[in-house]
Every structure is written in C-alpha cells, then in structure tokens.
Image (cartoon, rainbow, N blue to C red; front, side, top):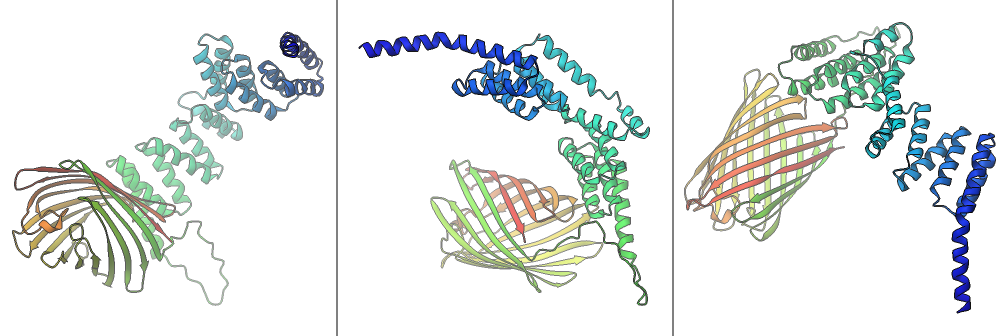
Length: 519
C-alpha cells in the first residue's frame, strides 16, 4: 500500500515539474536563437523532445532553430508533421508559409494560407501573406507584360513569373499558353508540349492550345502527331476554320514528305540527318480482353460475357485465338474460337471464323462463318457474309449479312442488315446503321450504332425455332490509343429494347470495356 502511495505521489510531482521544466527549456532555446547559437538551440530542443516527443511548442521552437540556421528542409518536415497533429497551430502555419515563400514555392504557400483562412477567416497575418503572394505573381491582363519582359531580354524572369503564377493557379490555360510559347522560344519543346497537353485535358475545346501544339509538331516534323491533334481538336470544335486549315496543311506536308525522295550520289558521302519524329512501330502480337455486363430488366439479373484473345500478324493476314465466357439463365460456359483475316489484295479481304462449345443455351455446339469485304476506291466499301450455327442436334440457324459503307471526310457511315433463318420457324431481319468519327488515325474514333427490326432470342438459343423478338438498339462508343498506339482502349454503352410475342418487355442496360496490348 505504501509503495502504491509513493508511485502516485511521484507521478503527481513529475506532472507539476514538467511544465516548469518545459518553460525553462523553451526560454533557453529562445535565448539561444536570439543570440544566433542555433546548433546549441537545436541540441537542447532535441534532447528535451526525446523525453517529451509530443510537445508541440518545443517542436515549433526546433523548427524555428532549423529555419534560422537556413536548414529549411528539416524545418519544413517538422512543421508539416506538427500541423498534422495540431491543425489550428497558426504560428507553425505562418512559419511554414514563410519558408515556402523564401523558396518561391508559391503554390504550397497559397494552399496553406487558404486552409488557414478557413480556420481563421479574419487572421490578419494570413490575409497579409495572401496579398503578398498575389502581388508577387501578378502578371497583368492579358499577360502581355510577360511577352514584353521576355522581348526586352529578361527571359528567365518572365519564365519564372509565369511558372510561379501557375503554381498558385495551375488550371489557368491562358497563362499556360503564354508560358508554352516562351518555352518554344527557348527551344524547350518537350516542356511546352507537356504543359499544353495538361491544359487540353482540362479544356478540350480550347482550340488555341491545339494550334500551338500542332505548330510545335510541325517544327519537329512530327506530322503524324500533329494530324492526330488536329482530328482531336475538330471533335470538340468541328467548325473551327483554323483547325481545318491546320489539318489540310498537315495532309499536304505529309504528301510532300512522301513525294520528295532524297538522292544520294554513289560517289559522294552524304550526311543524312535522322528525323526526330518517332518512327511508327508495327507490332506482330496482341492480347485483348473484353468485358460485357448487362442488367436485364425482366429477370432482374446481370448477364456477363467475357472474351480473352491472342492475335498474331502472319504473312497471309491476322490470326486470332479466343476464349469466350458467358453467364446467364443459371448457366455458365466457355466457347473456343479461331478467327482469320486474310488479305487477298488491296481491294479484297476476308473474315473467316470457327467456334466450338458445349452449352447450347449459351453458345452453338459449333459455328463457322465467312465474310468478303470489297473496296471500291473513292466510292464505297461493301461486304457479303454468312454464318451457320449448329446449336445442337435439333436446332440450328443461319445468319446472312451484307453492308455498304461510305467515308465522308473523317466520318464513316455504314448500313448493315442481318437476316436470321432458323431451320424451322419464322425468319427475321435486323437493320443497323453505324456512324463513326475518326479523330486520330488509325485507332482514335467515336460514334454510335442504332438498330431496329426483329431477331430470334439469341440469349436462349434453344428457342430460335419459335421465338421472334422486336428489337431497338442504341449503342454509343469510343476507341482510342495510348503509349504510341501500343494500348488500345474501347468503351461502349448499350440500350436494347426487346418485345416478346406475348408483349413481355426486356431491356438490356450495360456496356463493354475492352483493352488490347500490342507487342
């Protein structure tokens, strides 16, 4: 009992002593800082914090000692941790802002001040610091002083002022555009391109950004990249005359580049400069995955269809091996498929396909198809195809299709009907139209498919002989490439309305997400 009392008394005594000790050490550290003995002040504060690591005031004094001794990185680290523990510690916030301003980190300082003003809306020191930052980064509308400053020879000053402004207001595309132009004058093309691309992501309809980027690509002979940008800009501003002109100029430049072939004399050694434009790389292999999910309203279930494929470019054409998986109507199954695209010549192509499976509700036991594509140069393209589906020993159906498509500038319009002919039962026809807008050859395009007509119930193949459904379809989509056309992404949405013979209504709501990696 006596020992317990001793422990309690000792604890009370230490609790009373600690504030006194803290006060003494704080006074000592403050005096050492005032007399510029920063190393001793740091040692005293660190020694105290070993025993009392959560003392926020001593952490602040240690940070101040580092700051006064020009050890900004150590001071910043301590103050950031201190503000995580005590967000309302405004003295620590002010000091951290001052360090950031000393190092021209205007963006970080401005962010801290804005946070401080949310906690203390009338805090005069925060308001004063905020006004100082805005005064330091002020460029003057419409940012002409930057250009004048640069033209007068103060090049680095002009660039730094624009950079400091964007640290505080990074989304200001007008200043970003001016800074990009200054980078171009300095020959810093990559910096200019990256800056402009960031702003295009934020403001995809700001045509001046596209024009500046295209000019950079023309100067660097990256004509293909410039053409892609022109197409992309015309997606968001299809009637912009300057972008249309740039697109036409690029087409002529690429035509001239193809037409002019440099002649090298066999008796002379001619130094050939390598183009800085990246050479398009062709990939022989690709892997792809497509995930389709649809909510089916009448059964209140999500139906799944997944496809994984591997493709290889051969001398005769592209060859694919696919595994397709479906889950619906309380059944799951896989289908194994081979597809081949032989090229007969520049105007004739084939699409040949064969598949096998063992779940006749979801997939035919086996199916094979072929379609011939015919190109009529400068006129239109057409195709003619047929598919035979052997569902099981009792059910089968054939599907015939044809198409006609026409390129109109960067757009394409395709009309394609599908004719379904079961071995028994009524036939049906589905009419579809596909509008596609190409914004970046060859993989950047977007569009939509509409359809109307009748089909069998292709979700349950065992009903093809006696069910014909009315269909309406709307499916917007987009396809684009990343990493120099190595990664191809495809996204689409689907709304499909089906009406059964007994007037039961089924709606399909969902979409497709696909990715292809070329190597």
